[in-house]
Length: 135
Length: 392
Image (cartoon, rainbow over all chains, first blue to last red; front, side, top):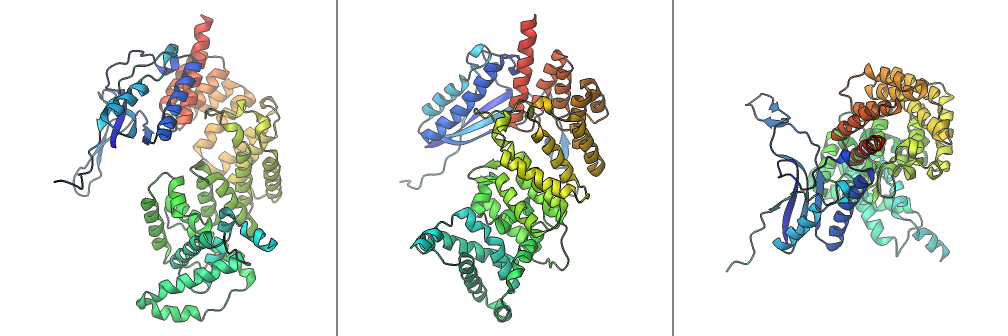
C-alpha cells in the first residue's frame, strides 16, 4: 500500500471545466455537491483506503523567525498569492493507478447544472518507509 | 443468581460515575492526586476485564480496594517514597458523608486557574468523568500520545496545589461549558458527558449559576435532534421541526432555571438559559416572544459586556422591532466580530434586500469557521441568487 495526497486548491490549479462560483449554483446543486463529498469519503472508509480529509479556511498568514528575542514577523494574507490550498484527502491505496482513478472520481463532483466540475486535483505520493529486506 | 445478573449490568458509563468518589477516597487516605488518578484508571481497566464474569457485590468498594492496592504497589516500587507509604497506610478511612466533598474538591482541582483551558478540559474528563485517555483523544481528534502528554503535564502543574480554601466555581463552569460546546465526535458524546458532570456538580453545590449552566445545557441539548438534517446539514432555529425537540429535557431545564431565578442572583448562564427557555417555549417560530428575548440580551450585555451577546442582541432586535432596527443596532458593532457578516446578511434578507443579502451570505461563507456553517451560508446565498434569477 502507498499513501497519496489529493490536493484541492482555491487558487493555483488550472481552471476547471465547469467553473461557476458555488453561490451561483441552484440550491439543490449545492446540496448534491456536499452530499457527493460525504459519500466519497464514506466509500473510501468502507474500501479501507481512507486516511484523512481536511478542509482549510481560505485565508492564512505568512510567518518567519526574526532573530533571538524578537517576535516572529507576520505578513499577508496576500490576495495575489498564486497558490492557495483548499484542503486535502489522504488515501492509502494499492497502486499509483488506483490513486489516479480515485482523484478522477473526486474531480467529477457535481457542480453548476448538476454537471461534473472537472476540477484539477494534485496527486502527490508520500515518501514511504525503507524496506526491511534489502538484499 | 438474580443478584449476579443485576450486578453484571454495570456498563461502562455507570462505572465511570464512581471514578471521582474513588479518587477522592485515595486522596483522603494521603495519596497524591496524580498517583491516585493513575491507580483508579488501572482499577477501571481491571474492572472492565473482570466484572462481566465476576461482578462485585459492592462496585465502589471493589474499585477502592483494587485502586488502593495499585497505588501501594506503585508507591512501593519507588524506594524514595518509602516514608510516605508509612504515613498513608496509617491514614483512617473516610466517613461516608465526605464522598460528596471529595468529588467537589476534584472539580475545583481539575479546573484550577493554573491550567490552560485545554488541559483543564482533558483532566476534568479523565479524573471527574472517568474517560480513558484514548476516548478523550478520539473526541478531540488528536493522537492518543498527545492527549496523554497533555494530561500528565496538567497533573504535574497541579501537583503543588493544595486546596485549602474553596475554589472558584466560575472556573469549573467555564470548563464544563467548553466540554459541552465541543459537541460530539467519535464514540463519546461530549455534550451528554458535560450534562452528566454539571448535573453531578449541581447536586453537590448550592449555586444559581451552576443551575443556570445546567438549564442552558438541557435546553440546548433538547433541540439537538432538530438541529441537523438527515444529510448532515445545519438547520437554523427558525426552520427546525419543533416536534423533534425533547420536551422532557425542556421541562427539566425550565424547572431548574425557574428555581435558580427565584433566588434573584442573576448571572450570565441563567440569562442565557432564559433566552433558550423562551425559544423552547414557542410552539412555532412566530410565537417567539422576541421582546422578552431582547430584554434578556440586555441583561446579558450588562452582565458580560460581551460583543457576541451584543451581536445576538442586534439579531433579536431585528425580530422584535423590525430588520431596520436590527441593522441599526448592528451598525454600532465592530464588523470584525465573528458572524457579523452572517448577521448582516440575515437582517438584509428580512428587510427584503435579496441582492445585498446574497452578496453578504457569500462573504460570510468565505469567513465561516466551520464547514456546516459555511455550507449553510453558501446554500442561503445560492437560494437568494436563484430567486433573483427567477424574478428577472
